[in-house]
Amino acid sequence: MGRVQARLRAEARTLHADVVARGVGADFAERGIPFLLLRGPALAGLRRSRTYVDVDLLVPPSRLEEAELALRGLGFAPTTTPRDFRLRGNPHAHEWRRHDGGAVDLHHTVSGAGADDETVWRVLAAGAETVDVSGTELPSPGQAATALLAVLHAAHHGPRIGQPLLDLEAAIERLRPEEWAETVRLAKALDAEAAFAAGLRLDERGAELAHRLGLPEAAPGDVRLRASDVRPVALSLLALLDTPGLAGKARLILHGLAPTPAGLRHARRLARRGRWGLALAYASQPLWTLRWALGSVRAVRRARRGAA
Amino acid sequence: MTAVIRLASDRLEWREIDGEIVALDIEASKYLAGNRTAGALWPRLAAGATRDELLDALLVRFDVDAETASRDLDAFLRSLEERGLIER
Picture (cartoon, one colour):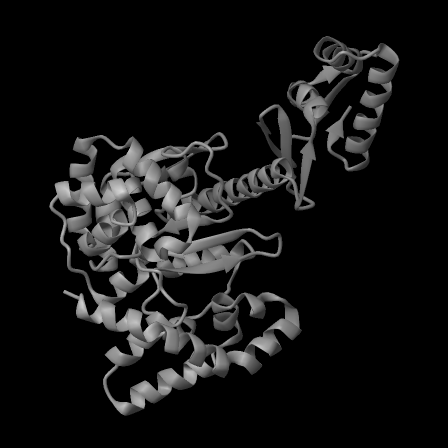
């Protein structure tokens, strides 16, 4: 596919995501469910040419079930269950998909935040603004919070995923010093300073900024691992080491070797290639796990040594 | 030709990217991409325009003779009509 064609395809997906955001936003508004649109169009304020494929919505924890019901009513279904995340730590969102390809990540919190879900909602909703989504104004966090979320997203995906790094770079480029002070205040309120610092340090100028802002060097093991060139099963290995008791560890190992289909599709590209791809992924899962586990030992040791 | 032609706005979302058009047929869940010719016509179709106005727009914008422009325009309108994306 040529560059122009690829660009137009990406723009078409963005258009589709905007249509989904407006439809879901209108439905939530009608039901009185408060929400904030994270990333996507909100980040387009930082990086104009940004395209996106899904919609990230944060809702207050007390309204999460209602939001899920609303999504079901609109034809969406969850692609993962809490069991799929047993080995990768508590998820901050669940993906919902519809037959037309529309995708919503329904957040009850944001990655890197240690504060409880209610606090996360309260802090981000307090500075809410609106963002233009193809002609419709939808609520989203303010500029400082959006920059914070861009940094936390980069910290979550580490140095191997391109788009969050470009968002991080744009945030560093665009935000004024006084806005960074506000971002630090928000990071403290969300108990996300460690992930915020780790995210900033993925960029050379961000590392200088983290130093100037006096952000902590130490970070929990999972934060360090995510922000490093993490192996696919390194987080699972860390979870295994941190799980007390032999029975708990055995359950995790069993789950790692035989995950649910949704969990396997989430973790491995091969499993997303139809029935045969899924079957092959299951057949090769023990070897795949062993291979990546061996490669992850050093990274996990390093992360645990440097943990706060 | 004085009949006004317009896009079926209730089933189409679109945007212009560097003079080209990206559109989403919401009912069919299909993407459409249009070249610069479509880029010249699309905003006029969104607002509503006659065939003569559309033809004029092509002749002003591109170095093309009236016969070729007319043929291209009809083919373009036919392809949209077949998809139910324009109303007359």
